[in-house]
Length: 173
Image (cartoon, rainbow, N blue to C red; front, side, top):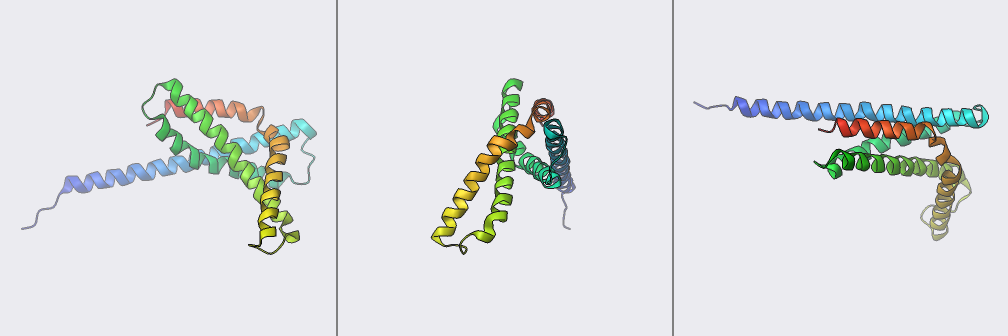
């Protein structure tokens, strides 16, 4: 007669449930962070010029995706980095990871949109000229984002960053 191990099966199911719960929570929180960054951009654009821009939807989408993707990448990394350290260290880890990650990924998305626009005037893919055009177009887009786009994270984005860091510090598993 063959014996089965019901406790092993139950443990496996519990691990799967915990993993699914973690992933769903991560996706939910990423959507909230993306919405917060999109709202930050909207508020900053409203304060700057009353939302008078022809690219409002594209800007909001870039900031939403930048926030959501950065949450998915940086929060697991920061959790790993923070470990079982004191709350102040965990707060610092989340604050730094989210701030740097959100700005970097949003700048990357902005640069790729910029590159996509200018691609029609660039040399054929893979050529040496194309590589230089790609690098310099991306660098100028990141510079433009640093000068003009970074301010769209202020003041709402900074407040959301502090709140998210506190939330993550308190709810770290």
